[in-house]
Image 1 (spheres, one colour):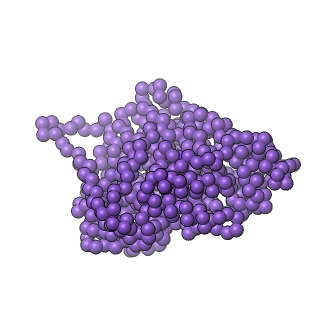
Image 2 (cartoon, rainbow, N blue to C red):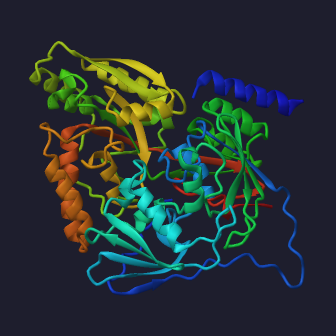
Length: 533
């Protein structure tokens, strides 16, 4: 009876409330060479004694929002990607904790002398969950499809096309040499061409068997629960944990209640309760800085006040990042001076333009802009779940202290992302994960990525052509020092616009059942690496 009552309380609360630093990755091999990495060994049994049976075969997890899609290329939303990462795989996997590329669907690759053609050799033992073998035609289809999908197109931004040479060989053609390509392709999941084609517009709205990852989806109710099951034909060996049950719980307090009641086995907890969990032998804990940045997006096309660069900079100087850190993360998060954390992302600069808390300078800039008596900038949009309400409230108070007024508007994350990508907002506190390379910032501004960025730079307000040029030149640079000089200039230009104001790099306060063996990652965990005692 206790489990039923606790689960009912969790669901009620969810309804009410809505909705270790890795080292640098290995350098890109010299063009014209072949790189082959050994396969991860499949689990092997003992010849002398059978392994002990695990205590459990099921893992209960939660995410903060309903599942947005089952399309592996259909979203970049963090909560949904937690699930998709268990179901889908790319040619390679970027291990965030180790800062290394690991082979998945591909077993090796070569790079042409001009750096513009990558040839991948595929494993011969990879199957989709629908039973079809993974062929080069599926890989080519997946890359070419990614070019048309707003949430992942930035990862394939320099791809011209992909072609299947034979069933086990695929060639990917690039416009120019592209330093981040191997890291970026880890975010392009391989899909079954047959299944995607047969389902058409319905793909992503129902159970998908188009992935080749360690878990397949067996039950789906987008707003209530979805279940994954270990894929028996997974080429690295069947996962140790047989089943994963996911439920959406938007409210942090409800998540804690469910975890303490045994309804959940692993959570990203809150920093307030982290120390008490760490002191309890029933649990294991780890506080890990995420490769993620929270920022305030400022729409320069929203109104006259926000079109003024001095007003935008006044907003940036008015924000007390330490106060945000203590309000939302109990002081455990990292302060963000730049959109991409240089400690996690290759090519990310520590450049000179940044905004430290300076309310007097904010007032001076307001007066300089003609708003000495203050200004109303509209609405501050934020998601109603997680730590976002705390961030929004502190930002509103910081702005009011220097004479900048704004209303608060809470909402559901998925719908807000649609608004933001259509530039239908005034200011928006939000955030995004990064993927190991500074090229991730491309999604924030690059002129051809409409439907990805929250701020539209193309027009007469900013030198968007130079921004695009710097992005392209930095990614084509093979010399790290030359690339860093270009990214420093680009980063300074972006920061000067005061349209994306970095706030903090969140901390992941992981807490889990002491009987569960876990390998945590800064962003995307892989249940395949976990097991029960």
